[in-house]
Image 1 (cartoon, rainbow, N blue to C red):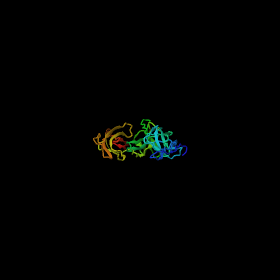
Image 2 (cartoon, rainbow, N blue to C red):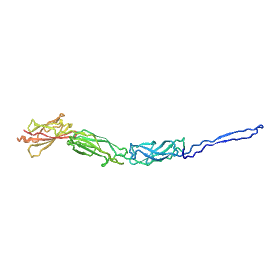
Image 3 (cartoon, one colour):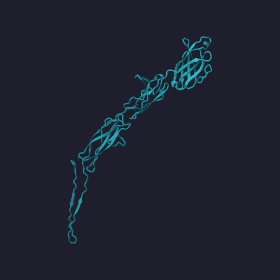
Amino acid sequence: MANRTKIIPLIHLITLATGLLIGGGVSASVVEVSDKTPAVIGHAPVVSDVTFDKTTPAVNDKVTATPTITDADNDTLESSLYQWQLDGVDISGATQDSYTLVPGDGNGKQLTVKVTPQTDPAITEPASGTAVTSSPLTTRGLAPEALNVKIEGTPKSGQTLTGHYHYNDRDIDPEDISLNGTQFEWICSRSDGRKENLAWTTTYTLQDVDGGCAISFSVTPHALSGTPRIGAQVQSMKVDVPKATSSPIIRLSRGAKIGEFNMEIDYAHLDSGEPTHISLFEFRVKSSAPGRSYGYDIGQETNSRSTVTDNGRTIQFEAISSYRKEVIEGKNPSISFEVTLNFKNGIKVWGRSPELELK
């Protein structure tokens, strides 16, 4: 041991010779007294520096502290005592040489560790040194994340698709849901490489023109606070939208009576669901005269008292032409129809009939 103060134990031998006259004789007595041995007084261990394996930790990062400790007596070092602190406040249970940041620890908070050096108290006192607080580490914030981005709904014209996602921020920063906050985008990717921006909301209703698109939904998350506040854009898996058949198949023939016609509308190939209404625009072929509009619901009677029927594949009915009077007058006009078929799910399809000469 070097540079230490030692108190050497003293053993005093005190010989007491007492001449006692006992019965005319002399007696001698010897008494030995020993003092207790006190502890050795040396130097306390000292922390001169604390280093870390990470200098800008973020949530979920594990930080390990390595103190530099010296002891003037060269005593054997014991495990030091640790207490991690965040913004100067002790972190409950954080008493090891390492600490893993949890949500809420990021975003510029000051992380420190207090180290108390220890040596073997059986060798030299004092065995515990003065606690030293490290220089602070400034914790790093993490960007918000959009997780589980996906599309729900039927990819068919007239159907509404809904984009879903889960907002996550490991610094517990709340989501910015204002107009300038988290951003959304629906994108149509064509087979020739073209991309079309369709909408900037969480829902999108498919149109006929979207047929052939590979639709995707993208989310760019924004946080109300923290740094950084804007996360990376995340895109859903693409959903293929089948090309819509352009129109129903319309067949037209003369009716049983003068000026009447039979119409059959084949819609099964459209795969658009249940039809509810037919809108008709009747006009004379090669005529500048204005046409005439009317329509029927499925199950309704026409102007010839024929019921509009639907067998799940085709619609059939008989009706009186708007130009019946001209037929009676012997003019035999040729007519055609523009037909709009309305479905229960909101889809509308348009078609044009062939020409028919009325007689």
